[in-house]
Image 1 (cartoon, helix red, strand yellow):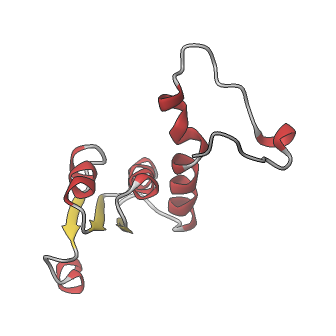
Image 2 (cartoon, rainbow, N blue to C red; image 1 turned 180 degrees about the vertical axis):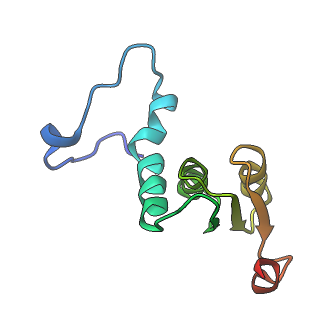
Length: 109
């Protein structure tokens, strides 16, 4: 993110970060969390669904977490970077698939 940024209509959609919340803690609330949640929400997830998220970066991890919140029975994260796949497994509780190591179509079936 930038040191300086122009935010049109900032008086409508910005908020003051409460005391005691560090910049690092607040960072996901401004970008990855709402974007991941919106992506999961677009999928119309129902309890018991299996959800597949392509990408285990910040937004992908938040989409995976959001899928769990929406009642998914199983969440699968797909990526190629070992550290991102580890975060999907360890922090999002997802099944992590490396698309350079497995045939994704076959693995999903």
